[in-house]
Length: 254
Image 1 (cartoon, one colour):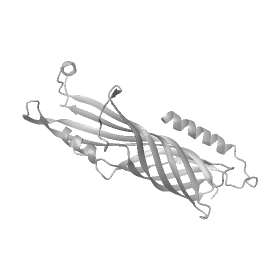
Image 2 (cartoon, one colour):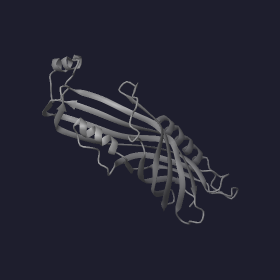
Image 3 (cartoon, helix red, strand yellow):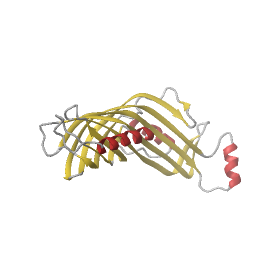
Image 4 (cartoon, helix red, strand yellow):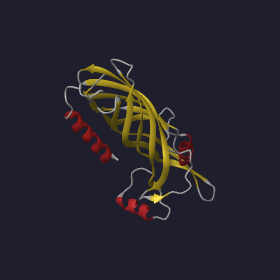
């Protein structure tokens, strides 16, 4: 996914560099840009929080978490006000507890000191398609969509503090180990309607603020060394609302 985004951005940079300085030959804007796009993503976490609380940690906050990424775009001279580009993003939020409660196979309850941690991560990348509204002047207001691949991962850790080398390997060889390190991964296709506003700050610099919603399709769950997970709940997925900001450099036509 990261390689795909890098290739897209390289193509955009090369294309922008090759653009002519005069646009009178085209009945459309010319230009493009590339930039850093920090944001805030708000996934639906009710389903996974039920599982995490049973695991022994607080849930992931419903308020969301920070993401970091990059994006680029290029106006196509043959299609008026239309631009194509690439995007990539990623972020995570963790939840941990230093006190645990276990329900054992015989239904007795065991409590003790130790650490439980869950790390919830979202990432994605692909292509962007946008139409810049021609009746808005001096700034760019664009409606469009993102199409690409996304990933939701959940890492689970359970340990009982510092141990020596021998105890570690004894625990690793145990049929019922005292520690846990495992990960689940959900991969899917992304389709995201978007609305972005870009405000020029200087000749080759502009700022972005925008929002959109990731719709996830074709969910596939795996765990650890790419083993399939069957019958995963449908309410644990990559659907999420996001807010995006950005700072771009390039040649802008608004």
